[in-house]
Structures are given as structure tokens and as C-alpha cells.
Amino acid sequence: MASTLAARVGAIELITVSPSEALARFDRADLDRLAAHHGWPPAACTVLVAGDVVTAIVRHVDRRRQTLLVIGSSGPAPWTSPSARSISRAIINTANWPVLLV
Image (cartoon, rainbow, N blue to C red; front, side):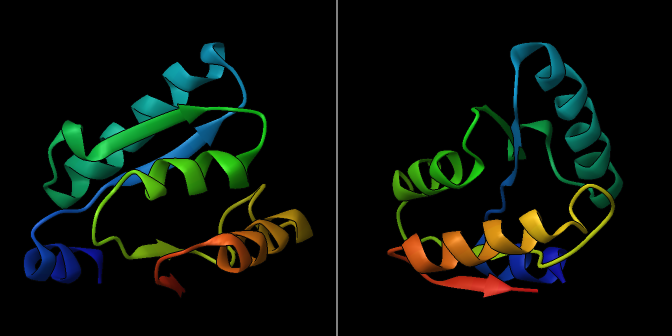
């Protein structure tokens, strides 16, 4: 789905939020592998370092023009936790741009 969307809109960015600079290096490696698997350049990957996931994502996406944020409602641990659902819900309630929850 993401590849089809990227082909239509011309750009895609993979974003994750890491709680520390030390862990950001590992998160970056994971995103780079995911991007390479789908044929996207490493430049399509962004690791934000922040303690508050919702604020970090909302601020980052606010700086973009004509943005559609696609966010998962569940996924591999630890994202299957209730806090992941509350993160999605908080982003949807805060966003000033379209959000697609998958």
C-alpha cells in the first residue's frame, strides 16, 4: 500500500520516535532496512529523538506541506500495547492535517 501511495504522491517518509540518542542509532538502522526492502532511499527515513511521541510526530508533520499521515493502530511489540492505541488517538485528536489510521 505504501509503495502505491508513494508512486501517486511522489514522496514518502518513514518516521519513528526514539527515546534517546543512544537508541536512535538502532532505530535508524531498522528504518533504513525497511526502506531498502521497499526500494526507497535512506533519505526517506527520519528518527526523531523525544520523550513525548505524540508531540514529536505532530511538530514534525506540522512543518510539512500537503501532508497525509498514515499511522498504524497496532503492530509488533511494544506497539500492540494500549499506549500505542492512545498515541494514535492523541495524534488524530491533535492533527491539523489528514490522518489515515490503518
